[in-house]
Image (cartoon, rainbow, N blue to C red):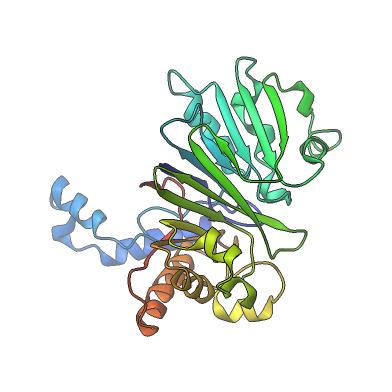
Length: 313
């Protein structure tokens, strides 16, 4: 399976601000020595040695993650955040582009819908899109943001063939098995588990983990145990999580404890706060790694979701 990240922020799109760009440039200039710009090779070496929060960006789009695998007739897409626009542009530029897309919704808060009106493949009559959700009213939820006065183009005007699938039990998309689980979030949110050729990927955005999630009952063990990757909401610092109890999101330390408890091999911190700078988000990654060391947790790799990240398992 190949996992691609198109949108990683929560709540609202959050592009890098002009002041943050200036701060990055200033910080880079302060580190330059004459020998660092003496030749093209020296410049490349200098740039490659910069910390990731300076050399690049986490990205500002809201949630959208795609998974491709052998035996699929098109990508499985988790959520329609603003990152979906970039996904559509990328696939439209490829020849041949997929004729089928499978879009699975965690929930219907606006930051997980807002990219759909700008998804270019949906306006192509040769394309088919299957939409999946465990919640009744899927078509109505998607239609309401695409009507006057919110948007000038209706869902019905999208030329693609649209199928709305209410899921109530585990199912398959091609050779990929899909299971889902209700999580703790205002208005509910669903995590999804994809299994293919013995590999297990879990997408679990917009959830606030509780003590019940750590209980080793059959439901939790069957769903989470020994996953190869979990893409998990880690929006807050520990201090902010205390201030925003019951908002439906996690501090990084809870995600580390959870991944360790279920023997998950790789944790990807996801759904970053739109108010956090790239530097702060990377400091959360560093804090999560230090927390893992302090708690003497082994066999867990921790990474950060950023736009353009690709993972193959």
